[in-house]
Image (cartoon, rainbow, N blue to C red; front, side):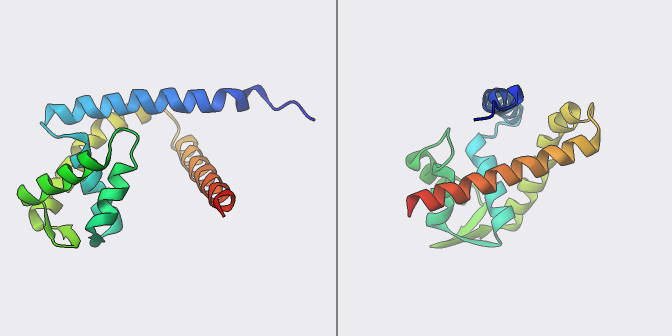
Length: 148
């Protein structure tokens, strides 16, 4: 068996530390606006997967987050509805107010991202994004195949 390059053994730990650090920065940044992370996650999911999403799917996607559970996810969706950001019964969608809040938060959240990434060559960032997407897709395919 061939010895893998050293960088292969560093990959997972580096990714885990980056995720933990960036999540902490995001949470601190959102706290400046009085926004809970689950609110941001839910608005992002609805904006990306909408315009309409089954309520149960939104809750399931939120609950699948490492930091959330089903109870917090249900509370977040209920809070978004009472705040006027989403509407609907079994199918939910962003209201005009929810769309405006998402746009405002997206612009706000992009500030630390821009600050951190602007020090790197854009081509390197694009390569990293493509690589991470490919790894994620491959891992999901392998996981699905193993589950069969």
